[in-house]
Amino acid sequence: MPAQSHRSDPRILGRRTLQRDHRCLAALLRPGLWVLDIGCGTGAITAGVAKAVGPQGRVLGIDRDQVLLELARTEHAPIPNLQFEYGDVTTLTPRAQFDIVNAARTLQWIAEPALAISKMKQAAKPSGVLVVLDYNHTSNDWEPDPPGEFKLFYNAFLAWRSTNRWDNEMADHLPDLFQSAGLVDVKSQAHDEVVGRRDLDFTERAALWLEVIENVGGQLAAAGFCTKSELNAARECYESWVKTALLKQTLAMRAVMGIVP
Ligand SMILES: C[S@@+](CC[C@H](N)C(=O)[O-])C[C@H]1O[C@@H](n2cnc3c(N)ncnc32)[C@H](O)[C@@H]1O
Image 1 (spheres, rainbow, N blue to C red):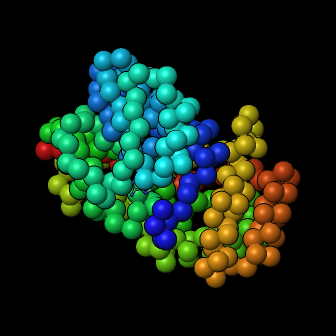
Image 2 (cartoon, rainbow, N blue to C red; image 1 turned 45 degrees about the horizontal axis):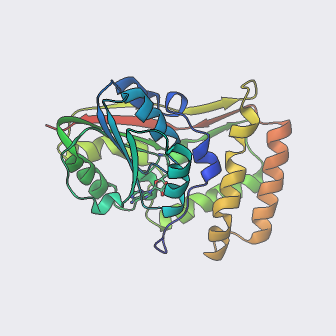
């Protein structure tokens, strides 16, 4: 992996599903479609896409992380219309092959999102659809307000991302990027990830930020955005706050779609 990179946590990626975590893409799928999934990670959503397009369809998942790709291949090898390939979207070979080209939660980690979108466009057939689902990290919301120790971590996380030129408001900037790339009929819809204390999977999903602290905390500390003791304090406070106080977490997201003319 390049120096300014990070590995997404396979625990978080592996529990996602097409139906719950990418409803907008799920609604576009039909038997027989060819779909390219950029930044497929462990392939959890990609496998759902392969099932939805059926044996006449074809799905290719691409990722620049070999470790995640190996997990994807091991987990989803028995699905015959599904393949995983190593690739970086910013250097993708033009294919003009796919009915739908998707990137979920991926452009947020790319310093050149305009280049990524132009490569995605080249991978789609004329009249094909581009779908990008992404976060607005500055608009996330917790009820009640999280403990100061966690907020300190979260601000360090945003500052670390900005320094790496990863857009903390990626979702809001997608429609302009789509228009500039020459996509037409561009639509943007809210797609927040909301979890509340009454949800059966509350504990698992609210643990996301513990996993993020564990996963990228070392990088933040090494780069001077926080100290190891601040990380420990954030982890401990957040863990007990989730158990006792957190009622609702809203991660602000948008799904943006556009057509290749
Ligand atoms: C947060 S994960 C999202 C995984 C999955 N799409 C989902 O929604 O759960 C982002 C993925 O994008 C991949 N990624 C980041 N930059 C990439 C690039 N330039 N080209 C291809 N994949 C990339 C990462 O390796 C990671 O697997």
